[in-house]
Image (cartoon, rainbow, N blue to C red):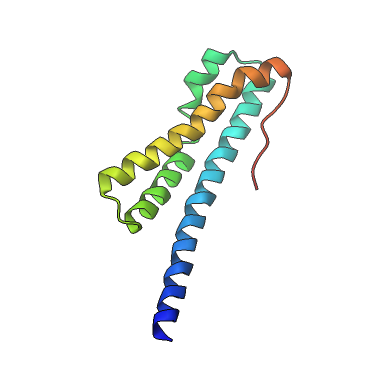
Length: 115
């Protein structure tokens, strides 16, 4: 019975860490959605958008990286592996916006926030 409770507690704690990392990713993504929509409405060019996008939402990006690092460390990664992975994931979120910006602009569409 104690082993079962230990496993249940560990699973719940792991799920909470993953949920925290995921919620931080969503916050970063939603911040970039807001920034992207403002830039699209102002008809900012693609290269200007790409230059500016990396400098916005820094608090959300750092929160995402910190949550993902914590998650990776709890799963046994070294600090350098955790940092590299978390930074790569944050870079991927940013790339999704910078890569899609021209398409949004040319089709007059907008990104959608996650919930």
